[in-house]
Each structure stands twice: as C-alpha cells, then as structure tokens.
Amino acid sequence: MDAKTDGGAAMPAGAAMVTADGVPVKMRGSNVNVFYGEKQALFDVGLDVRDRHVTALIGPSGCGKSTFLRCLNRMNDTIDVCRVTGTIMLDRTDIYDPSVDVVELRARVGMVFQKPNPFPKSIYENVAYGPRIHGLTRNKSELDDVVATSLQKAGLYEEVKDRLDEPGTGLSGGQQQRLCIARAIAVSPEVILMDEPCSALDPIATAKVEELIDELRENYTIVIVTHSMQQAARVSQRTAFFHLGNLVEEGETKEIFTNPRDKRTQDYITGRFG
Image (cartoon, one colour):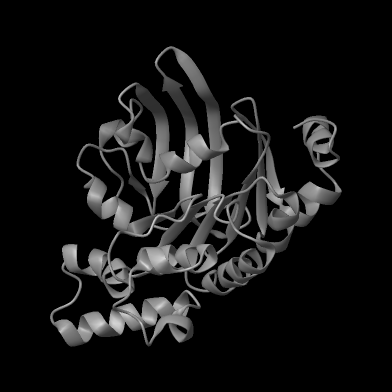
C-alpha cells in the first residue's frame, strides 16, 4: 500500500482495536482505494470488521464488495495492474507493510471461494496440505488429529471418515465446499473470508453451510460476500452495503434491512435496482 501508519512502521501486534462503543475489532480498513490500471474500483472505503462477528458485504454486481474482500488477505497482489492505497490493519499490524509475510498472512486470513476448489488430492491430503507446508504439526499423529478436527468443525467428518483416501473432487458440491472450509480452518486462521460460498450450491447444501457459518463464528471472525439478502439476514450480525465502489453504509444487519439510513440502500433492498 502507498499510505502507511506511524510514518511507515507497522504498529505492534497484539494492541487491541475497538469500535467507538468498545467492541473488539479484528480488522480495520481506512481510506482504502483500489485501481485496476487507470480504472478506480474502490473509493476511500473505511470499515471495521468486528472480532467473532459475521460481516456480510452486499451490493449489486461490480460494486466493489469482492474487490474489498480480496484486499483483506492481499489476493489482489496476484493481479499485475492492481494497486491498493490506504491502510488495512489486522490486530494493529498493517498487512500491506513490506515486512509482512504474505504466506503467513493468508494462513491467518483464510479464503473460501465462490466455486468449490478442492485440490486434485485425497480428502485427507486436501486438509493436511496447509498444516504440512506451514510446519504446524510434529508427526503423523498430530496431523491426523488436525485433519479430523478440521473436518469435524466443517461438519463433514461423519460423512467422509471412512473414505479419507478418496479424491476430494469426488464429493458433492456442498461437501466440496465444506472440505474447502475444513482446509481453511486446518491452518488455525483468525479470519475466514468467504466470496459467495453458496452461489453454486443447492438449497440443502446452502443451509448446511449457513449453519456451519453460525457455528464457526464462536471461534473465527468471518466476512462473507453474498448476492442473497436473505442469506445476509440469516448469517450476519453486521452488513455493509457497497454501490459503485463506495461503502454506502454499514451497521447492524437488522437495522440495515429494516431502517437503512441511505436511500440507495433502501432502493437496493427493496429491489428497485441491482
């Protein structure tokens, strides 16, 4: 990022960030702008992501919500023409500081994509891959425990425990997505980003993932991009509405859906545009 905090130095990790009303903040974006070449995709976005809350990002297609999500673990770094300015903090560390190890960052801030993308490996190896490359376990027994625990947290273990050596790609769409969530959990992240995780799933699989999100909130901070306002209302405690690259408003989900402050939010929620 171009802008730095404290004259360019990363703030000390561990110092707590809180909202004005004292709620712990896990990540904080300030004056975030994103450019793809000459085209600006985000304009001065400022958003607090509260610790152990589900924050839903909503808005019409092309509004910048997925772009902002990808800023939170520097996935936009993979796009040559993309430039990000402003500041994004994770526990008081500027994630765009040159000293930040991006691989380590993406272990702390995991990602689940729109389309399930299991590796062409066994169910076991899909989950074991991250802990193995990050050196998180000392032996096979510890790795077995991490795989089993991650699958249990993802609500998948009972369905696959007798076929862990079978390919992950052989699972149903909903199971594949829960496998990808287990894979994200396996490296003990603090934040899980989800980019429309249910858009490719049927209603039954969607319900299972939504139930899982609700359970995961006890231990993780979750940010979810969704086109389904019903889903946002079901799974999130906070909702942020984006429009044309701007963060229009953010607040308690119930308040955003029943009493929005901005007419653009009202128009989107009532189906007048988007």
